[in-house]
Length: 223
Ligand code: AMP
Image 1 (cartoon, rainbow, N blue to C red):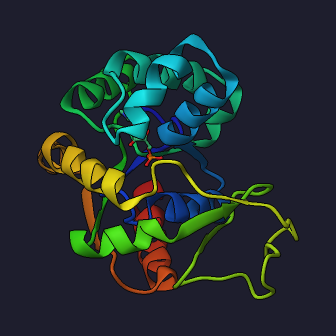
Image 2 (cartoon, rainbow, N blue to C red):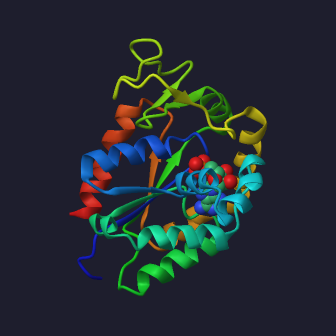
C-alpha cells in the first residue's frame, strides 16, 4: 500500500441515505463525494452522447451499462481534486464495476479502504424516496414527511427558493431500482467482506446517529 488518499465506498439500496451521508463526510473529512448518479444526471442534462444513451435506462430504474458508467467515472477520477480522497456514492453497482475499480486502484498500488454498507428495510425505502426533494441551488436534501425547511419554501442552508424532484423518485421506478439493487449490487457486499474492508452500519435510525458511526469508521480507516 502507498500513502495515497483513501477511496471509500458507500453501498446500500436507493433511499438508504448514501448521498446524504456522503455529503456530510465530504464536509467533515474533506473527501470528495463522487456520485455516479449525479454524473449521469449531469450527462443527461448536457445532452451528451452518453447522456442520451443513459436517459431512458435511468427513467426505467435500471442500471446504465458498465461501459458508459466507467467512462464517466474515469474522466472524473482523473481530475486533480481527487487527490483529497474519494467517497464513492452509487458506485460500484455491478461485479464488473467492482472488478474495474479494484484494477484501477491496483495500478497505483491502492485498494478500497472501506466499503460502508448502509443496512435498511426495503419497505421503508419506497416512502422515503417518494417524498424527497432537493434545493436546486445547493443540493440540500428535504422530505415531505421527515425533513421540511424551517421556513416553508426556503432552503435552510443557502436561502434558495427553488426545489427539484428527481424524475425516477416515484413508487413504480423505485420498485425497479430496488430490484436492480438486490440482483446486481447486493452481491458486492460479499466481495468487500472477502477483501476484509466491509463496514456494515444499521441505517434506519436518526441521520445524526448514523453520521456519528460513519465518522468513527472513517477515523479508524483513514488513521
Ligand atoms: P442514484 O442517484 O445513485 O440513485 O442513481 C440514479 C440512477 O442512475 C440509477 O437508478 C441508475 O439508472 C443510474 N446509475 C447511477 N450509478 C450507476 C452505476 N454505478 N451503474 C449503473 N447505473 C447507475
